[in-house]
Length: 396
Image (cartoon, rainbow, N blue to C red; front, top):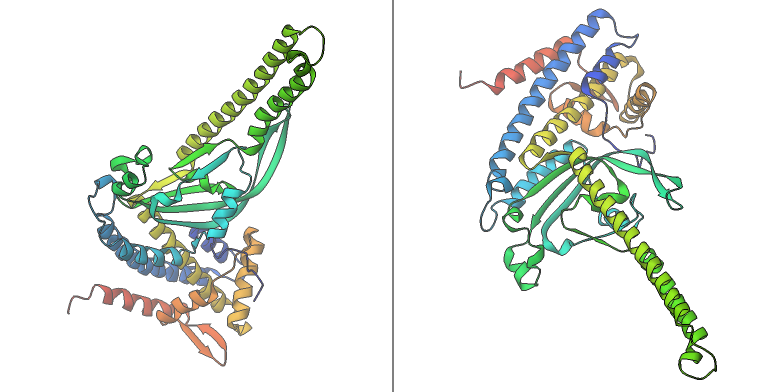
């Protein structure tokens, strides 16, 4: 198997594009293309049924956790919901964002030159998940706006945030009532974002406080300190009578006014940066926000279904059309990853074990002496059709 430790398992190509590309291969004739489409349709139908069942179960539990319903008191079955939801996320190839990644985002340099504090202690529950990565390039103004500096980085294709606030009593006990969101804090909040820069993760939190960076404080305080020292050295002896001479009050006053003007301009520049940041965050939340609360369940379960079916179709296809290759688990894994890379220009760590497990559970996989294969399409269709019929067999 290829060493793809840092490559995501998520396949960011739609199911229809994957199927079209497979069927378009020279090795597939007209009759085989028809049979493969039929097998794909049956796989999609079975997974959609299973996905729909899971989706309805999650919705039923979340109904009592949904912030839009303004639940009161202790939230019931939060951990039960999260356990099932975590399973769906795993099937969809989502990965949890670690504490180290979050720390790096908070301490690293953001796209906007401003410091943010996230009040993590206000959360009773907080989880972040990522899906896929992509490079991005943006520009930051420098040298008083005369030059734009390119900033390159990594962005997550999707980020899912799950948070639950602490009760009102905690905010009262800690004298934080000014930060208490009120009735909006109730419930289990779920938010889905797209194209979030890795080092800007803190921008998606609802309880952040913009702070002045050390460099911004330095711009304001350094000239003031330097000016005070200069005045003290130059005019101190005169003011206190240690050195004869006339006190040039207009010069002192002019120096102080100049210092004050520079400090004011530095502060106003910081305020402008802060306002630009807040405007950008508002814009990002509007354009990058994809779903909230119960709508997240629909998106996640649909995406999980999409990933599961793609993996099964890819494994079945290559084991079928390359039966003479005598594929092992390792060779199949390498073959699928190479095909995705050659066809779509992306690197994916194909979950070969998961794909083969699906085919095995459906009775489509055969194995002998470490060589794996699949049943032919006609037999596969009979097996899948029987499984479908048994789903709705009400005691006949």
